[in-house]
Amino acid sequence: MQDFAGKLAVITGGASGVGRSLALALGAEGARVLVADVDQDGLERIEADLNDKLIDGDTQYCDVSDPESVEALASWAFGELGGAHLVFANAGVSAGEAGNLWDYSPHDWQWTFGVNFWGALNTINAFMPRLTAQGDEAHFVTTSSGNGAFIVYPDQPIYSATKAAVAVVTEALHIQTRRQQSPVKVHVLFPGPHIVDTGIFDSDRVRPEAFEKPADAPDTGIRTAEDLRKIMELMGQELRLTHPDEVAQSAIDGIRNDQFWIAPMNPDSKEKIRARFDSILNQSEFPIPTLG
Image 1 (cartoon, rainbow, N blue to C red):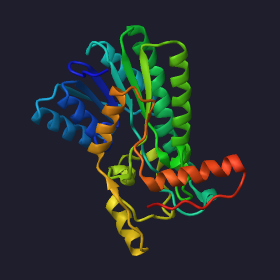
Image 2 (spheres, one colour):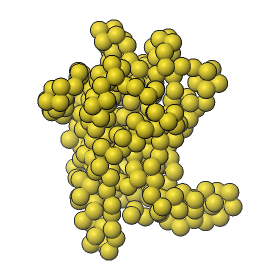
Image 3 (spheres, rainbow, N blue to C red):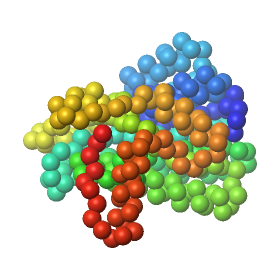
Image 4 (tube, helix red, strand yellow):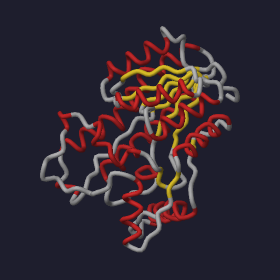
């Protein structure tokens, strides 16, 4: 797909971060956008941004962890809005886990898997049958992360596990659609090449009460990417950041180039990935990965 003009792009987790940048970038390309999120304030802000830029856009509340909520989103997209040709299963959160893995609250595991993994799967289940039935070229993109799919950092095992699972499911979906010669092209997006400056570090702002973090849970003290950068600076390490707009452009380029792996990387990440896979093939120990 080279021309997005008039195509409807559905973006979950679209009120901020990479999702917001995707909505604005695709809108600038002439696409219509349907932005879905649980963040009501964020939806109001992106709606205003779309209007300011004269982008044909709609917003809808959607909790991707709830299959019925995602089904309602798909029903609206393929009913009232006439069908979609671009779907981004992009919604994601981070539990902000800290300390020993065995001490994490079950709520952290349940909430993060509910949004990151089940959110992607619910979006696949709601949209893929409809996209396939259309018979036209369409693109389905999940947002995974090199943190989990490629490299395992020791301090974020919940987030890493969910993103590894998303990558595996997406790869299986890609193989199935290729084998079927489906008109739906599947892609997996790994935001980068550096840590992306988004609101995911402050995911607790949208955490449901049912999954509230225990009062005595360790606090990382990290609410923004800038917080992380400052902490690493105190440790004598430099942290480079990537703007979400750059990730959105990578996603658009990846769709145009029909890439399954949309994974901009920096040399340090490539070296860490290579070391990990060498250790698998050689059945040897590997260096403990650090951010940077």
